[in-house]
Length: 251
Image (cartoon, rainbow, N blue to C red):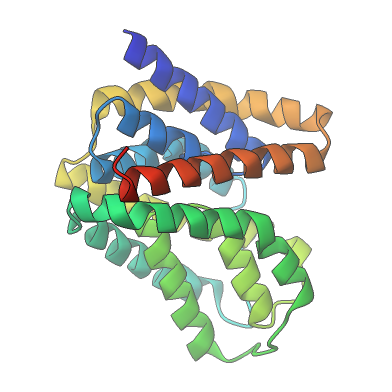
């Protein structure tokens, strides 16, 4: 019972974090591992638990598809779908012992994205707009990352699109949400079909996330953005350090 209560609380906090600044997987993944779920199954279960909140957000943007970096949004959705499928299959093929070693680096990458992706997107542009090949290749890679792990992948997409020539950053929220949801949706299907999802823990966490999301959105209206961002980065940095210790010092 105590384990299930902790998972509900983790889902609650993760839902609130995703509504505020992102980084919810930095709560759900450690919580699942802490109650004894192997890391690969924990990552898959975390993705499933957080999926409804992301899918709901994506649905609100379903009628706002627009070209990204001059490339058709349907082409972008197709390569994101393919990348998400490839990433999920890759995760299912990774032994938990190997994923335990890889995971801290994925968390570090996600933390760096949370810290710097927006700044990079605002400052740098490669101006490759209209060149579909590089754009689709990068998007496929982001889809693979989204299906495999996915932490902060939305921010990575915004940064990558900006680097590839997209100048209207303020209009990227809709395509970002849709692309992330696409990668997550095919990953969720793959994880369910593979039978790797730990349903009792996942459903409890999912319920917490459904409560935490609206609560986080309301809280976000009261808290200054800089505060939520700093609190999120403090948490993600701490979790990343813990997983490095866990992987390389065997504590």
